[in-house]
Amino acid sequence: MGICDSTMGLSNTLFVMALLLSGVASIESQAYFNKTGELPCHFTNSQNISLDELVVFWQDQHKLVLHELFKGKENLQNVHLKYKGRTSFDKDNWTLRLHNVQIKDKGTYHCFIHYKGPKGLVPMHQMSSDLSVIANFSQPEITVTSNRTENSGVINLTCSSIHGYPEPKEMYFQLNTENSTTKYDTVMKKSQNNVTELYNVSVSLSFSVPEAHNVSVFCALKLETLEILLSLPFNIDAKPKEQDPKQGHFPWIAAVLVMFVVFCGMMSFKSLRRRKKQQPGPSRECETLKMKRKESEQTN
Ligand SMILES: *[C@@H]1O[C@H](CO)[C@@H](O)[C@H](O)[C@H]1NC(C)=O
Ligand SMILES: *[C@@H]1O[C@H](CO)[C@@H](O)[C@H](O)[C@H]1NC(C)=O
Ligand SMILES: *[C@@H]1O[C@H](CO)[C@@H](O)[C@H](O)[C@H]1NC(C)=O
Ligand SMILES: *[C@@H]1O[C@H](CO)[C@@H](O)[C@H](O)[C@H]1NC(C)=O
Ligand SMILES: *[C@@H]1O[C@H](CO)[C@@H](O)[C@H](O)[C@H]1NC(C)=O
Ligand SMILES: *[C@@H]1O[C@H](CO)[C@@H](O)[C@H](O)[C@H]1NC(C)=O
Ligand SMILES: *[C@@H]1O[C@H](CO)[C@@H](O)[C@H](O)[C@H]1NC(C)=O
Ligand SMILES: *[C@@H]1O[C@H](CO)[C@@H](O)[C@H](O)[C@H]1NC(C)=O
Ligand SMILES: *[C@@H]1O[C@H](CO)[C@@H](O)[C@H](O)[C@H]1NC(C)=O
Ligand SMILES: *[C@@H]1O[C@H](CO)[C@@H](O)[C@H](O)[C@H]1NC(C)=O
Image 1: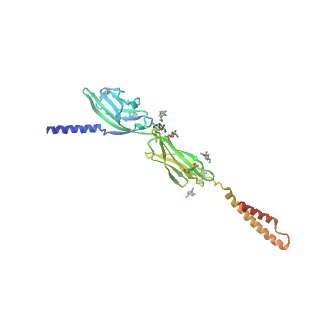
Image 2: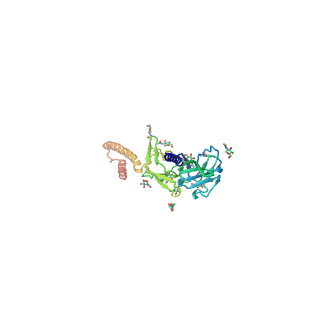
Image 3: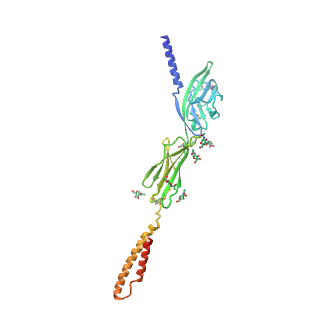
């Protein structure tokens, strides 16, 4: 019985300690790339214990030490090289500040507070925080990669946004006319800087400009947070149709020809009547007009 009681007591104690050390309490923290992040400890010093009696330190998920306060004094000895000179402790709210945050810094951090008693260190408080790092993508920008030519009317556009993190959800073009909105799904190209881990993304679109309508092209970048970044509009104004020279002149020539035919008909009718009275041959005017008509038809 005695043995059983003591083992149960021990296992209970171990369970509580495991709960304490597993970092059940964990909070989310967000930092911008190249800015300062906060790793809170949320220690409510209810007994008002002086820092001189405490050992306070922060570790990353690989147990590398970021910062250590040994009885109120900063101890650099255990601090890992990658964190040296990058941290500062805010004793007012027990928060560690991590400067010049990189994408690689995202992860879980633990803060530990121990009481430095005469018999050694006594754990007092532990806190975990998950640091996420974001970098704002630049406003998407549309550029013309190939202009429409007179015969094709096809325009190629590229839209790009740079230096962001994390990877966005999607990127697309949207064409707005007076009455319609068309979304063009395109494949998002991405490239990642192998040092900073920031992304550049772009999409390309090739489309026929509808000459009859004013078109506004937008480019949208949907971020991981589902927030949407829009480019400035790229406007293509409707143009009065530039006509093909041959096609453009055809109706005019046809009209003139019809007039010639009618005119000739009238002339020949008149001359026929006149011929019945007088003798001179067919109208020369009409003959030359007929010649002209033939020429026109050939050029057509
Ligand atoms: C980080 O910020 C500093 C100024 O605060 C700037 O000079 C530097 O270019 C930035 N680095 C990157 C990679 O953006
Ligand atoms: C800690 O205090 C500073 C100001 O002294 C404040 O900017 C910061 O948000 C606080 N951090 C937390 C986690 O409360
Ligand atoms: C905590 O202790 C310090 C001295 O160590 C004292 O100046 C301060 O007033 C105390 N604060 C509280 C809330 O007891
Ligand atoms: C990033 O963008 C958000 C708005 O989307 C803005 O509130 C924040 O200040 C920006 N941060 C930086 C570092 O540019
Ligand atoms: C495309 O053509 C427009 C005029 O139609 C001109 O203003 C623009 O500079 C051209 N862009 C490129 C990339 O050639
Ligand atoms: C848009 O719709 C209105 C009314 O339905 C119509 O009068 C107009 O011609 C349309 N415009 C275009 C560009 O299709
Ligand atoms: C991202 O875009 C910038 C500006 O265009 C360029 O200097 C940089 O090399 C690009 N980075 C990657 C990884 O493509
Ligand atoms: C990053 O990529 C460049 C070429 O794009 C290469 O020269 C360089 O060694 C790479 N750096 C790392 C750390 O992989
Ligand atoms: C425009 O884009 C299309 C489709 O990607 C491509 O086939 C075409 O060669 C491009 N035109 C020019 C002038 O680059
Ligand atoms: C296109 O927009 C211009 C003003 O920017 C307007 O004067 C014109 O009527 C519009 N044309 C069409 C076809 O909507």
